[in-house]
Image (tube, rainbow, N blue to C red; front, side):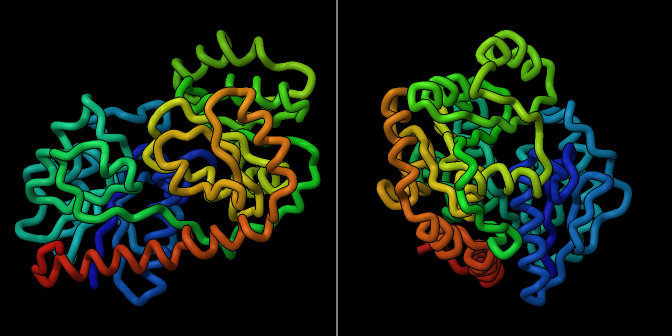
Length: 342
């Protein structure tokens, strides 16, 4: 197959640091290419994913994440270059609604955002002529009016992720400076458990910087350290050395990449019972779910006794790149054959 992949326009593929969507697109592009398919990628300038890329994309600019005009310009360039593809798989919000996309070519769109009031009508309109992929069952079930064609969990290349010993004596937190990520709750839980916490978080926007200054910085101190934003090597080293990843999300996150990355390093996950977490964490085997900081603190202490090999096995079995690529190929073939969903 000739497959066009459209990544968001703001961060290179693969991302140099933070960028869950871009990491997924990179893994998918590599996997599809390795399976013998022709891949054409539309991504920000500076992307190094080893597949063919469209010419002339705008430079990466993380400070403009969410600007619709950037997505529309990106879509115009992408679809003009993809007229000869068999299928296009778009990972942006605005792109699938671009009126000049190629004729009757099958279009797939992965919903990386929750089906919220803000974007519900967009996804509903999109689903009229685009196969919507949800990234968790929780996300898919959150709206009965959006036609979801397939639920496909993200996957990662576990062969590129080293297994850590978990002997650092600390818990880790990975995310961005946003109230929804639950960093204050992670700090409180770690202190209640008496376990040091090391924090790696993206902080680009003015809102993220303000949140850090007003809320997080005053909570730092003995046993709680902010490391900044880490590259992939340092991120996996941080996770692999930790007794557990603390992920007390405070919103219905469609899918938590940090959780499966932690499992790949052999590190259990302690998370709140929100969004996709129950689909990723097997309680008592690969981590624990809780609600309050005190429950999370008890779970953090208990997580140290879990089998790290079982965590790695879960990542390799349920969240592998191979599984993700196979499921996408099945969807593409179904669309090209004209077969209707069962």
